[in-house]
Image (tube, rainbow, N blue to C red; front, side):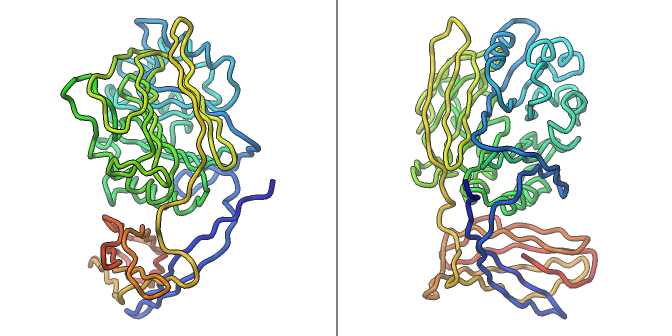
Amino acid sequence: MSPRVSRVGYLKVLAVAGVMVLVTCTVDREPLAPGRLEGPRFTLQSFQGPQIFVGAGDIASCVNDNDAATATLIDGIAGTVFTAGDDAYPNGRAVDYSNCYDPTWGRFKARTWAVLGNHEYDSSATAQPSFDYFGDRAGPAGLGYHSIDLGAWHVIFLNDNGQFVPFKAGSVQDQWLVADLAAHPNLCTLVIWHQPAFFSNKNPTGATSDPARKIFWDRLYAAGVDVVLNGHQHQYERFLPMTPDGVVDQDHGIREFIVATGGESTGQPQNIAPNSVVQASTFGVTKFTLKDGGYDWQYIPIPGQTFTDAGSASCHDAPGGVSGDQSTLVVAPTTVFTNQAATITVTAKDGNGNPVAGAFVTLAATGTGNTLTQPAAYTDANGVATGTLTSTVTETKTIS
């Protein structure tokens, strides 16, 4: 099968002697070669054909054997294993990994990519025992966010423990995420972190969304991400494809799965979230078959439990946006001085010169000493989005 070619629109602004010169380009580009992004470093891997991606969150506790039962399910499934956080109870200590996690899910360690949950930080502000156990398969030590390619899919692992690794707009992790999405224009993308933005609550009057994690959805929806996986809620749940505001969008929405069923405990949701299709209090694993252009999902329960869920969907492009030879991106001239913030104003227009609202603008800058703040929202009704660039080094900057 020949590689898919993505049509990518981008802008480049060259700041020379206080004047920014705009260049707008559209290029036909093949997807990046299979690889793994850890900050600036790639480690190449080879993947061919449909990929199996199977796992769960909230996994191992020494007080029961449910994790042994879910591990037995994975014994019969080849492919890549994921964890969705809270992997070793009660506190993510070295002893929790050695005594509780390693005897069961530990046998998949060589093919596992791990996400860090809140319990991984209970015993250490750096979650060091988790990095010691998983190595770089939990991401760079101290960070925990990274990405890999599986066949035609790009898979991103995020760290939503914001007290220890910030993820708010403009944070280092947020800038990394924006850059990683821009660098991987795959048609199919899956993203996984621990605590969901949308969920049914076991408390009959409890909240069913978490606004703090909307920033992830803002970035992912604008980039055309297809699937989000989460843990934390100790249940299985599947949602209709949605926007970051929780509105159903069958064409461009993100489908969220909560897969916190690895073995520690489960509870039946009482306050059902809007757009939640199924909810279940059961133990099991979720298997994804990641294909070129689409995916299948299947929930597999442990023996003695009967709940199942399965389906298929196609991948989709990003909503709206500015691309094509007739579209323009206009950047207001500005000068960047040492230790002085410069506002970068981008105006998006279509081929007829009309402003494009709701376009996603991503900025990057060359050089050193930079602090770059991304636009906090999509382009407004006038097609405008703004960011800022501050640098401690006076030099020519190229913004792209």
